[in-house]
Structure formats: C-alpha cells, structure tokens
Image (cartoon, rainbow, N blue to C red; front, top):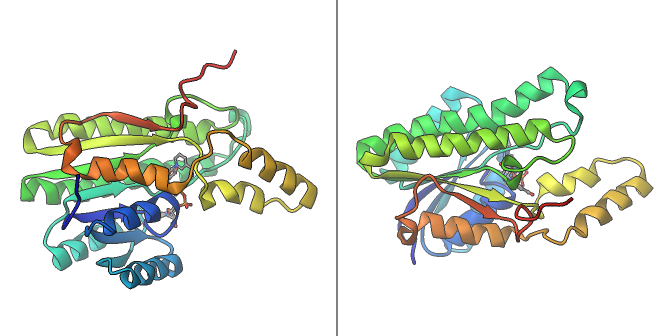
Length: 257
Ligand SMILES: NC(=O)c1ccc[n+]([C@@H]2O[C@H](COP(=O)([O-])OP(=O)(O)OC[C@H]3O[C@@H](n4cnc5c(N)ncnc54)[C@H](O)[C@@H]3O)[C@@H](O)[C@H]2O)c1
C-alpha cells in the first residue's frame, strides 16, 4: 500500500484529523496541499511538515467562499499539475440545543461550512479530476451522520447530508475513474472536541465535562482516523466507491435500550 507521489488536497488540513492525515500521507511521500481558513496554524503546519522532509504547502482557503476555493485549487494545480486525492474534511460542530432552541443563523452557518463548503470544494476538484481523467475524493462525515445524539440536530443533519453527497459523487463519476468514499469517525481527541470544555468558564463544570469526554471508552487518537484516510487515499482501496467507513471503535454499532 502506498500514496507515494500523490498530490493530496486536504481541507481543514491545519488541525486535528486533517493535519494528522497530511502527516501520515506526507511521510509516505505524498505532496500535501494544506487548505485551511486558519492562516497561523496553516503556516505552522507547512513549516512542521517541511521540517520532516514532507513536500507540503499551505493554501489559504475558506471553503464557504467560492472564489477562495477556486483560487486554492488553481494554485495547487499550478504548483503540482494535478490533484490525485481530495480529502474534504473541514467542518465545525455547531449549536448543542434542542431543535426549537436552535438559532436559525447558527443552523445556516453549520450548513454553510459542513455541507456547502464540501460541495464547493467537490465541484472545483471534480472539474480538475474530469480533465485529468481520474481522481479520488474522501469526505469526512461522522458516526453522527448515521445515528443521532440528543441536542445535536444541526451537526447530525449536516453529516447525514455528506454521506449522500459522497454517494452522489460516486454515482455521477463512476464511468470516469473518479471515486468517492466517506469516513464516519466517532469522537476523536481534536480541538473540535476539546473546545467543548475549554470554552466553559466555571472551573468545576469545565472539569466535569472534560472528565466525561476523556472517559468516553471509544475516544480515539487522530492517528487512528488518519490510518483509514491513508488506506482510502492509496490504490489498495480502488475497489471501494460510494462506501461509508465507520471509524469509531464500535460506538455506532451499539444500540442502547
Ligand atoms: N473530532 C471528532 O470527534 C470528530 C468526529 C467525527 C467527525 N469529525 C469531523 O472531522 C472533521 C475535522 O474535524 P477535527 O476534529 O479535526 O476538528 P479541528 O477543529 O481540529 O479541525 C478543523 C479544521 O477545519 C478548519 N476550518 C473550519 N472552517 C473552515 C472553513 N470555512 N474553511 C476552511 N477550513 C475551515 C479549521 O480551521 C480547522 O483547522 C470535521 O468535519 C468534523 O466534523 C470530527
């Protein structure tokens, strides 16, 4: 299994799952396009990867802004001549409320980043892949795209939509040697999860939430998800198209009664 020499675009590449995947693939000599809205972490990630002899570059990209996505994709193609793999992974968590309490603006923001952002990136990279005659898209959904948790309607709904977006890419491009698969991670130790307690002011409450999260039995390290991304980015997974890969240590398999 290898990803050697593949040009890999990663959105949300400056942190968490995206960064860990960039590192894993870069260590096998893939060229990594770190696409992120966070310039500070993005540049830091580029520096860190380069110091490990990984060919990587940061591209300032807001996935919700069509012009920004177009610019980043154009610059990546100018630099490396192609995009072999697009890991469309940037996402946020959104409001933790019952549906009647969700602010409509918060709901729309969540869709703007988690769904529309993936659509915009997919649209641009698929044009490149159509032209080059092959391609590989990997989308980050969540196990919460398959099962609901209380007070997570917004996040769950966006992640459910991504499963269908991934399957739709698979179906639309099946005759063009372009495939798409979806990963559905469970809870992973990244800023997306740790911010759940870091943003709580009351120290006692903060400690309580931290302990509860850190004691989730299926809480994963970023590298565990990166291993699945590595497999899907490699040609060893060529037979997979339109598949959802639940990476959650069995959390989603369990029905709690
Ligand atoms: N951490 C988990 O437990 C978990 C579980 C399941 C799914 N996921 C999904 O994994 C993906 C990555 O999350 P993570 O946990 O690594 O989080 P993270 O917060 O560590 O990383 C997310 C990255 O996305 C970037 N980003 C946010 N908005 C952006 C925008 N508009 N344009 C470009 N980049 C943007 C952020 O700057 C950040 O670098 C998300 O889609 C998330 O929903 C995470």
